[in-house]
Length: 344
Ligand code: DAH
Image 1 (tube, rainbow, N blue to C red):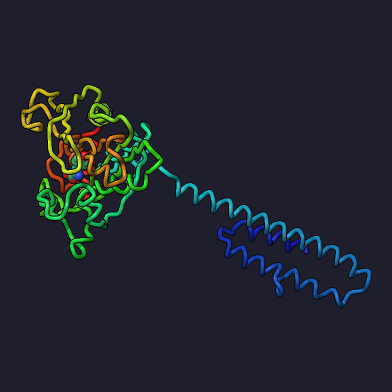
Image 2 (cartoon, rainbow, N blue to C red):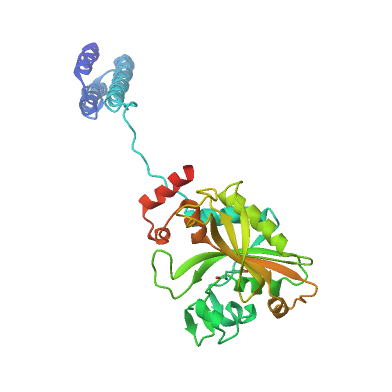
């Protein structure tokens, strides 16, 4: 019996794989293994012999099991160490670069304006892109057949009554109609607008506007100027100057174009501002008395100002982009240049 253990020890020494170890285990401890075979001899022994033999057999069984278990642990450790060695990571190797996205440039400008105006008490509101003629034109003081409609070549969807909004100004009407008793009304509405234009460097059949409206008592043009001033400085830098030029919109009186001093040449004149030192970024004005009346406000008591930025125009001016289409083609190489321009 003692020979068995010696022999097992010798066998175990030579083993290098788990498979071989299992074979050895079967050979000694398996049903037909040498230790099990010894136990079959018990039945022919006397009671005294059985006792001694049984005890010895158990001892050997335990010893053999321990030896095999020990060897198994050793083998597993070796395998693990080998694996760790062969799979070790070379931390000096350059890593794989994961490309990261950048915020959409139009969204960024819209968010900047939203954030600023929200801090001044404005609500950001939404309006339908499929709009009624009534809101898009009529209540904005542009009756059917009025030549001002020609400037906005509109996509009509049904009987000249339902259309894709050609401006975000209808949201002014919707807000005023809903806003009774909750004055002052202060809202901005960024959103998509549509016109039957052929797409080129400066036109798109779909573009973004940012509408603004304030209605209260004792509102004047200088309030608009002050508000515009804050927006212009935020977008183009603290040293930006602003000016109004007379203009014409059917829904404002007086109407103005709002200009910022050119942030590229600081007003000296360059190709971006066409040597004027100024860049127009928005239409605006005092809400027309007819529009106030259409929405149930007495113009003798209530006044308001409104403005409408073109988001693409703002982005083009800010980042010196000369082709509107880059906003919609989603070319990642173009997008990356915006980040670079911003860093400059
Ligand atoms: N809706 C005008 C357009 O699309 C822009 C505009 C001008 C909006 C003056 C206004 C405004 O609110 O007061 O051309």
